Length: 108
Image (cartoon, rainbow, N blue to C red; front, side, top):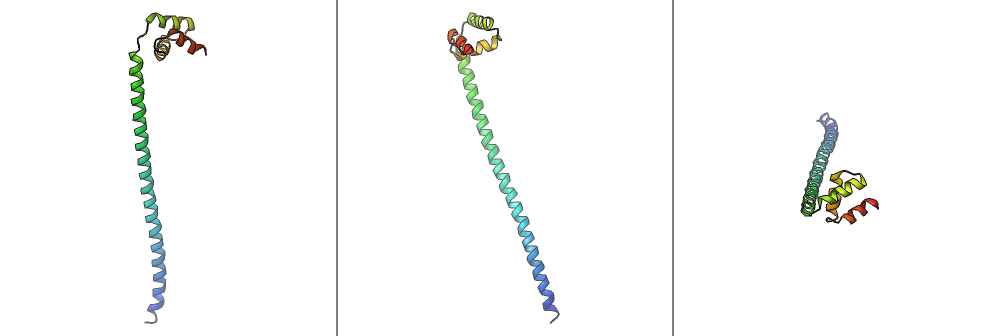
C-alpha cells in the first residue's frame, strides 16, 4: 500500500499535464473555428457590397444609355480633342448631351 501512493502522485501530475495539453488543443480549435466564422462573415459582407456596387453601376449605365445625344457632337469632340469616340460619347452622356459642358470637362 505504501508503494501505491507514491505511484499515484506522478499519475496525477501526468494527468494534470495531459489535461492542460488537451485544454490548449481545444482552445486552439475553438480559436480556429471562431476565425473561420469571422472570415465567412467578412466574405459575405464583401460579396454583399460587391453586389450592391454592381447594381449601382448597372443603374448608372442605364441612365447614361437613356440620354439622347447628337452624333455630330461626338464627332466634334472626338476630332477637336483627338480622343476616342467612345470616350467622347461617354463624356457627352455624363453631361446629359451638353457639348459645351463636355468640352469644358476635358479642358479643366
